[in-house]
Length: 377
Ligand code: GMT
Image (cartoon, rainbow, N blue to C red; front, side, top):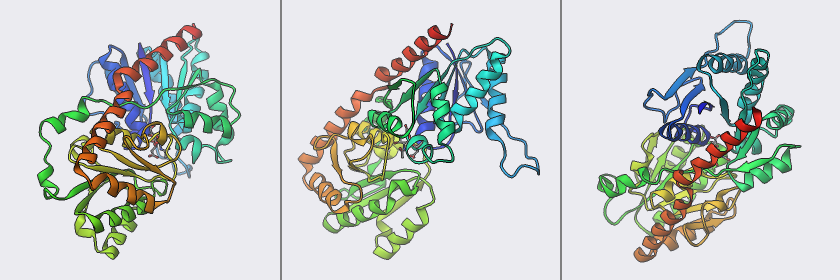
């Protein structure tokens, strides 16, 4: 199949999922065209069946806001015609599903029908999409998509609760490359570079936005390091970073916290981690938790959104109410304070992650493409 993938090219989970999906589909013989405003961060190698087409928005002084959706729609029309793209898979409803629908309508004028598969990722529904400013357009684009998927049962329920949806929503969970996330563990995991032998390594990865509750990460780590020697690896960039750095100074733990910034090599960092913290306010799935689990790292998380579908309480980690840092700290110490127990949780984390292996999940998308194409003929 010739598949056009529209996504955000940044470090956000939706862009990561879209990129990993495109790469895996290309290995399965499909021709993939990424269409977005920058080369996706996890898309390192282009090949004869992985292409990237940049959407550019020319600046014009009249525009207060540059019309990205318009440029994207036009680019989609051009690319579908030029490369004979058969199906468009758009990740994150805003504005991708809307722009794709406009492209579909324009192409119909030329007798071409390109079906659209829309994947809902989370904040496009829960935080941003349901805002009255966007809601009519988001509802419209979901209902006009030829197929709709959501990354968890929880996100499907949220979508049906928040919007007037006439379309069926298929749940296709996020997936993970289980081989990649074990490689460093087995081969060149350089734990000694990060911590002393007796120190436990705690990790957090996110875009440091308010929804991630990064101050809770610091509070939990503060409680952990009072009881056992520990280091915190903080990966990601975002608006709350400065406040986090300041709080570490105030608490006198700056020497125990390592800030990595954005990283494309999280599997290398996760290989030496003992525990992952994800105390988010809301999380449609929690891809970062799955990445940790695939590397054999247990997860202390909040019990919100789709996280309970990934992190299994008492097995791969523990879940607590949002904001309950005392419970999260207690659970973290329970796991970390006994080496045998820690090892059981590590094994269980990897075992739970195996339910989301890419070999099992990617064919679900292929089946949806085939069904959608067949219906549109
Ligand atoms: O908010 C983020 O962390 C990024 C966001 C995105 O738009 O990329 O992530 C969402 O999609 C991920 C991939 O499907 C999910 O794993 C995240 O849970 C989801 N984030 C939220 O729901 C807050």
